[in-house]
Amino acid sequence: MLFEVIVTNVAEAILAQQYGADRLELIHSFANGGLSPDKQLAQEVCEAVNIPVNIMVRPHAYSFTYDSHAVKKIIAEIDFLREHTKTNAIVFGALNSDKTIDHNLLKLVIATKGKLGLTFHRAIDESENVIEACSSILNYPQVERILTSGGGKTIIEGLANLKKMVNLTQNCACQILPGSGITLDNIKLLFATITVAEVHIGTGVRSNSQLDNLKFMQFKQIANNY
Image 1: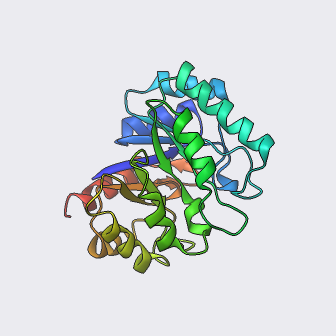
Image 2 (image 1 turned 30 degrees about the vertical axis):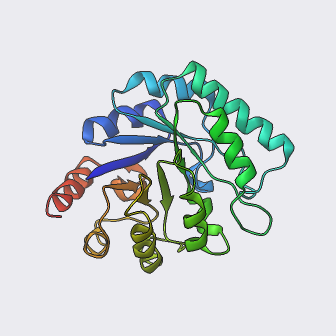
């Protein structure tokens, strides 16, 4: 089981690696569900750890629909990460105003990212139909994984859809990466319901907003039984 852990600065990145994280997602602003981090911070975090670092590309928190100004910022961020950092993958997602996947922007991002990996993030959970949205994303082999709660506020609320999404991806390279509200209290139910190779955890490995080594160890122990 691969554990992807959210971090917001260099100190957290180093600690998360020490505590057993397998991959990091670097963001700014937990409160807004994750925004693009500062460019210099992205460089520093990638240099500070030896595990893969996936970096959020999300210029604002207003919505997942982007105007031409925001699109320019998205492309500029990807260009920088590709050319000036050791970023493993970008974490990106976009919707049209009708809550369908913005395929035009997704294609542009794919054309821009070069060798960087690509995770389509939880914008999918705000789509009109999360299963249809998942199916449409699977037409892009460049998308390595879909970070999703199955359309629910948390993975438990979206568990039925998560199961359907995992079934959809059984015969393709794209993986479902469950995330949102994963805790020590519900991860056993998640593992008993779906079979996945990776999970995405933020507050679940924190106590009083600080990374908690004991919680890391407890998550690992549970995962070892599945």
